[in-house]
Image (cartoon, rainbow, N blue to C red):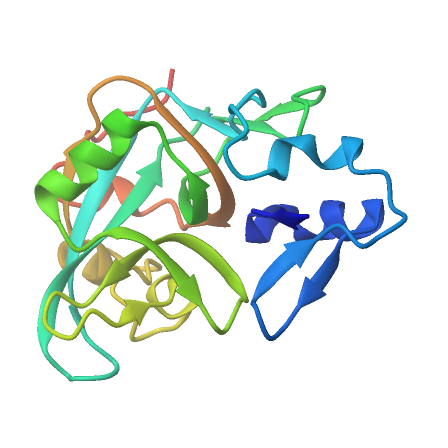
Length: 208
């Protein structure tokens, strides 16, 4: 039985006995393994798990980026969460932590339809895609010209990435617009420096 396992949950699936098929690039339940613990990753199953991230104040950022493949310039997008967002550390939501820091939502594997619509209204090329680097599917920037996936690691964690954010100069390169309503996602967290309030469009005081 094939599974749809987000990158952030691959270790959980592996511990339960799932195996990775490198030729078909998918996780599966091998013969002899009880399939019941894998219900939440079965294709077509209704989503019953709570989202891992809840943010009451979130900004959609835009910044200039150059495609690694065709070298064309485009506007990349990112989801930046203000301090006090809630992180469910366990898949069943049994443990919650409230963050005191700014953070990007990266390697996003699940979003509500309204969040996808809002992001795509700004950058239509933002969509789910398969990354050979991570061996998983996640919501990612894609080049509007050649459609190549633009990996999250480069965008957030390398000094020449669009959303490298460690100084006021970095912040000045970005633009922000606030998400309407709450932001929900299954995603990893990339913590950022507290210069985020200098990004044009972000409110100067975001703390409760």
